[in-house]
Image 1 (cartoon, rainbow, N blue to C red):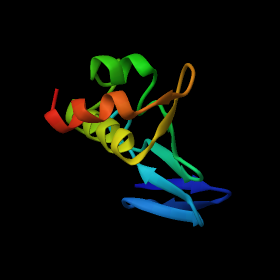
Image 2: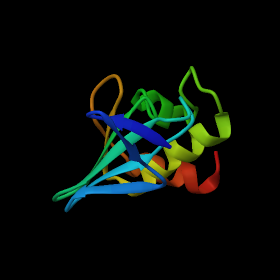
Image 3: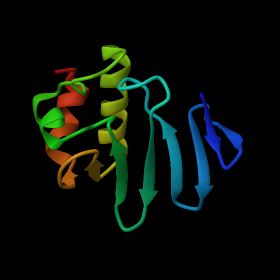
Length: 108
């Protein structure tokens, strides 16, 4: 996936380390070129954007309401929830991921 960045393109295949503790990750599903940010501090935070629009998506284990590929959207949501302790969704307040990690592992 290539994203434009200040007159150029950022080639994002899997993930790109921006600086220590900050990674851009490819999170397709909502759109083919969706990206999210993982930030490792005292906890790991996922700035999910529309890969996880609200906590309700994690609670109900459903993809964004508008998505181009359900399987990829669910895979992106599961990856972010597994990778992070806290998710900052595209809409609404941040939430802890612990209650939702097992749902993804069980494939609910």
